[in-house]
Image (cartoon, rainbow, N blue to C red; front, side, top):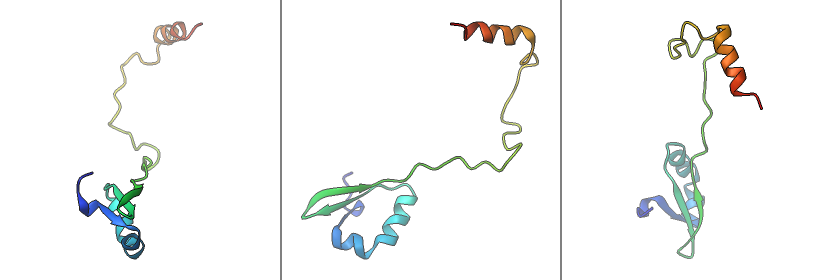
Length: 82
């Protein structure tokens, strides 16, 4: 991270915490320094997948016509035998 705009000293971070958090939520990484030395790094928290409910994957999955045939099920069972 070479950009000074992504680095704050502790006093600036306390003063502008809400704005810093907004930037992090948009995907930026922010470094907080103490006495000119990096002390902490704020990174975005991984987001969970937000599905709208049942059927939200409709049209996204394509299943073969024989996806649930006895032959396919037996082949899968053989693959998982120990």
